[in-house]
Image (cartoon, rainbow, N blue to C red; front, top):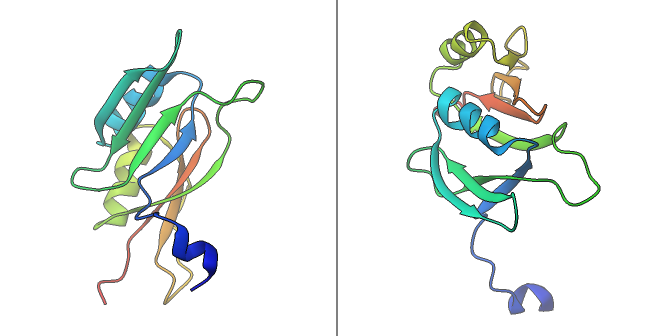
Length: 134
């Protein structure tokens, strides 16, 4: 163990941040479309809010926050991967409701799980995968 590591108190990945231009629009997408739960919604200075959403029962949250001053919101490869128990059904449902999803599910073969990308209203991409049960 490195000297630095032994002095840190980091215990988990608590949240990840996705920058959004319109918090209410983002909430409608993450809660209304993807089915996440809103767990935090607090003022963050004038005309801004700190909002966090999560998959029911999950520990890590996604913060939907305004971008830093001078930067645009969205357009990010978030690196967030959502697990699904029925990838084909989720892909079809999201596609049918008009969500910006890949046209097809990508399958690279074992050990890489089948997956597709979706984009939120700000163009932030997330990946949905169906992990193998083994």
